[in-house]
Length: 147
Picture 1 (cartoon, rainbow, N blue to C red):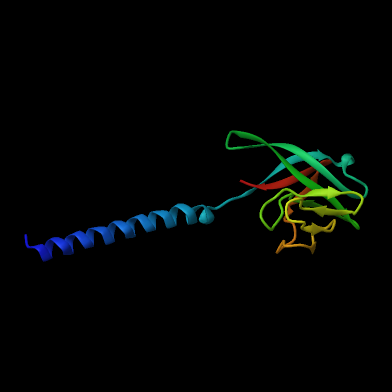
Picture 2: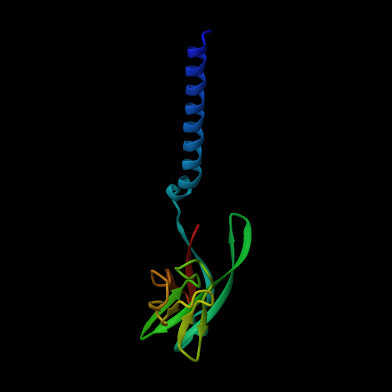
């Protein structure tokens, strides 16, 4: 084998290996976004425990694919509408808290502020807090969760 042929084969091998590695990385990080997910409803609380006004933090157990964990949502009453809001700040994923004195959600890390409907009031968050599906069935409040 001549030197030129050896170099061609070596370069072709490394180009093919780099392409294979790049495509594997691409599918590793992109493929979960293409997975079909469905929304399942879980018991959040009895209907009579809903707040009459304002915001209530609710923690509930969740079991998905055999894994148990505790999740948290905020139930907010805005006018006659009942909202289930995610506690995750849309800026960098910090957990927001409800400030009862100011009547707003506050991100402790970057000073993002949201009103009781989850709409951004100030700070760096680009979007409002995520609204989660909520339904009332047989006197129970059910929360929708993607599985």
